[in-house]
Amino acid sequence: MRVKTSRTLEQDATASLLREFMSDDKKRGTNLLLRQAHDADAFMHVSFVNPPDNFRLCYQEGKGGKAYRCDRLVSRREAEDALLEYLEGNSSWRDRYQWKAISKLSVCAEIARSLLVIGVAVGGAVYGAYRLIVTLIDCH
Image 1 (cartoon, rainbow, N blue to C red):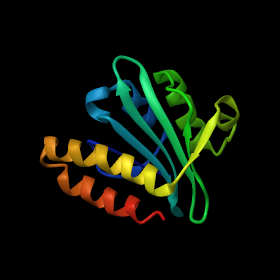
Image 2 (cartoon, rainbow, N blue to C red):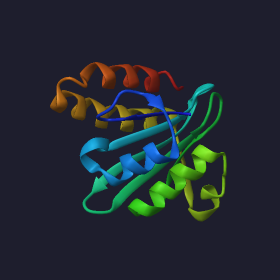
Image 3 (cartoon, one colour):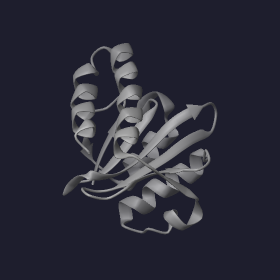
Image 4 (spheres, rainbow, N blue to C red):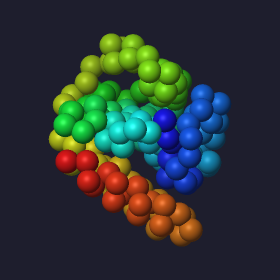
């Protein structure tokens, strides 16, 4: 798996790296994308909504699959647990929440909009945000 945040370049995902990103708001920024290395269209997205502990969960099943958004905001711990289970290939996180189907374009636009604002604010991360936006916009 690969991980990208609104403040870091994409890199190999590990449990310790995900825990680090989830515990450090400044290092993570407002968005974290954990994607399958073999299928860039299969991912889990976590966005920071409001301090101190509200996160939005979205996931996409992959090329030809559907995209979903959790019907409620989740805590930092719930978001971290879902990411770690997704990393391990454990799908039990799906059963803990109610999910609303959304269009892939809508989840891509939500992530892209957040990352573009962050990228412009950070300056040096603009190119990284741009590359992720291009990847996500192509997930139709």
